[in-house]
Amino acid sequence: MRIYADNAATTQPSHAAIEAMLPLLWEGYGNPSSLYTFGQRAKEALEQARADIAEVIRADPKELVFTSGGSEADNQAILSAAELGRKAGKRHIISTAFEHHAVLHTLNKLEKDGFTLTLLDVHENGMVRPEELEAAIGDDTCLVTIMSANNEIGTVQPVRELGAICAKHAVLFHTDAVQAVGHLPVDVKADHIDLLSASAHKFHGPKGVGFLYARKGVRLTNLIEGGAQENGRRGGTENVPGIVGMATALKESAARMAENAERISALRDRLIEGLREIPHSALNGDSVRRLPGNVNFCFEGIEGESLLLLLDDRGICASSGSACTSGSLDPSHVLLAIGRVHDVAHGSLRLSLGEDATEEEVEYIIRNVKEVVAYLRGFSPVWRDLMSGKAQFIL
Ligand SMILES: *Cc1c(COP(=O)(O)O)cnc(C)c1O
Figure 1 (cartoon, rainbow, N blue to C red):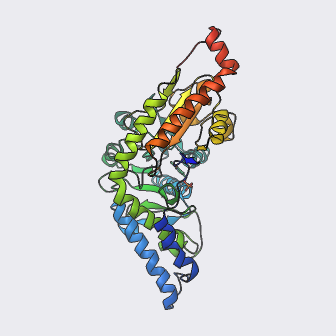
Figure 2 (tube, helix red, strand yellow):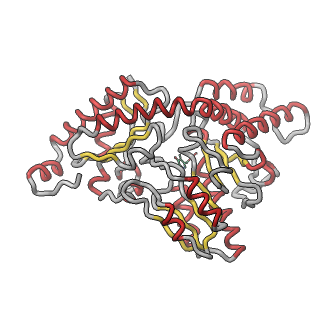
Figure 3 (cartoon, rainbow, N blue to C red):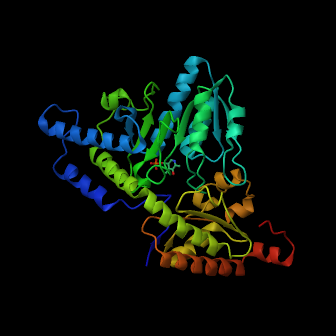
């Protein structure tokens, strides 16, 4: 048995997406920039995909640039806004400490380049407070970049409210919507979004393809110089099969969004209820304003990576914000941003349910996490110190 509960890391490509890609790989391999009919057919498929995606997020097709994924879109959005800021003599950027590294590392680069950065508090519940955004905006602010939904703790920000504040102060608003697109309604106009990043493999499309929405009038800086593809905003022959697969997956996700969200949220809430029975545990992130499939817990006295390995033995694919899995000495910057101390953050578990999750799977996960946490605590020196009163419980 395998229970895939790591949909925030990547999702299974949908049947329809793969079916839509195959003819473009086998026969329809023409270059969309070629003038003959064979190339023009690929061009038509490309433009149809652009129109389909634009419709889902209420954009104009001309406002979309296809990229290699969410990371590239984040980089291009932020560097473009910074370039516009630089030209206008504005060098202040507002963001949060729990953004994806594609955003944070790009911001760090800009900081070294003379930009100043304000990182808004995301508080214990992992939510940005709109009034704190408004208070942080100054005459020098050229960009606000805040993610729509967090990939680790799943909290969903009040994007429309944040966008309205940026619009009121005439500051560009970028949102990394990689976890939101295909899962939650996105309307770039109503939400006052100037720049938005998305990635196909987070909504049942293929990997290595995504898009950047840039509102008409927002000039983009190229990351990749080359031919005149994408209206001169990104060089390189387009990944036509990937883009068509992405559009197919997004249309499908959009059509099933409301129904899926309701069903998956119910399973998520059951999973949260079950895991809450584990003593000295805590849910990370707001319990209501979170992605339909996201569950993230800290369990005191254990190591996240041991938990993952033992869950893997029992067929459960999950993720953790502990140090070893993040490839650094520090635990997840997201968990630290919501105020979890190192020891507690090390014992974290993220389960992200997909649309084919079942009640039986959720019960299986609950039972097995309970068993594995108890087992690991049985020989954890940290747990022994907590139980003997030598150390204090935090949760
Ligand atoms: C996955 C993810 C990204 C990166 O997208 P890629 O397509 O894998 O480059 C960026 N931001 C968030 C919030 C993500 O979840």
